[in-house]
Image 1 (tube, rainbow, N blue to C red):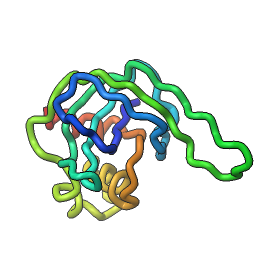
Image 2 (cartoon, rainbow, N blue to C red; image 1 turned 180 degrees about the vertical axis):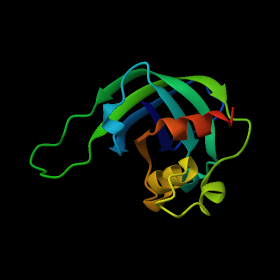
Image 3 (cartoon, one colour; image 1 turned 90 degrees about the horizontal axis):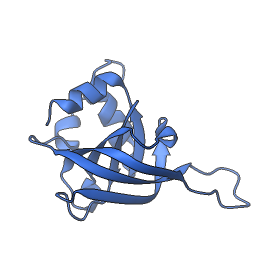
Image 4 (cartoon, helix red, strand yellow; image 1 turned 45 degrees about the vertical axis):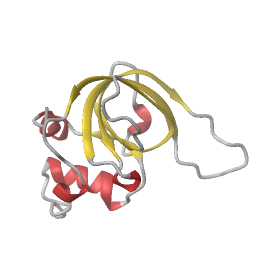
Length: 136
């Protein structure tokens, strides 16, 4: 399975990235070392959307806080960049894709990243991974 992360990214051209205690949704908590991950620089923090593809070099679940019944699983990951995006893909490009039942990979990404605009790691379908691959 492939994954995507939307997070604050200070240096979009860095060769390695570390993301601590990231919120996970849509299967994102299953990320492990060796998985492919697509990196989106969060527009909430001034980013421009898809910036890179990488491989996860480490993934460690964050311990839950005691005494809190409902907690979103969080994971800390390190990523080695394998490619830089050649074309833009972010909120502006994905926003028109809002027919949640059309089965299109761009719609899947819009739903998972921008319907609830928080930063997160998400699991993505093979079709969405193939679609994202066309941006490199």
